[in-house]
Amino acid sequence: MDTVVIASRNLKKARELEDLLSDLGVRVRRVSEFAPEAPAENGATFLENALIKARHAAAASGLPAVGDDSGLCVDALDGAPGVRSARYAGEPASDAVNNAKLLAEMENVADAERGARFVCQLVLLRSPTDPLPLLAEGLWRGQILRAPRGSQGFGYDPLFLVTELGLTAAELEPEHKNRISHRGQAMASLLQQLRDR
Image (cartoon, rainbow, N blue to C red):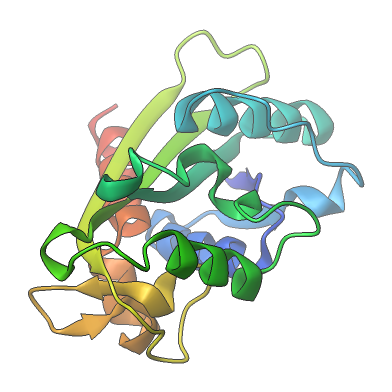
């Protein structure tokens, strides 16, 4: 495998995945080079959506594809926003509007009950009909703050406190975030599976 297509259309997420894939020593391309339209992400789980995106990218490009689906699951909200993380406040989606909705939903939640986790499911397909896709998962525990902090990252990063560091995901340098985040954990697992084959 000398080339792989990233199935994400989120530019910031795609950059993170490109950085994480750099250890693989392959050429990385983006799905937007091959397919102008995105598939409907109508899966009920992160894994289903990652597979939808990876299959679409592999079919459009004729190349192996990495599909990612990730999001924020908040304990006090019964796992919401979950698979709807990117569209939590509806369409058109924006980080600012999603974060504002999350803060409003959690306004009366006590500090001790503001636990959350970022989840990432990664899928690597060698072809659109690959019967044995490689699957990897990453979970990153933290807490939801009452106000945003930091200017790095994207999505819910400014509200996600990495408790053991006392910093939000948006206050971490990108290299540090990539080592410890849900996406970093999932990619490390995926790369290890590739090495073990």
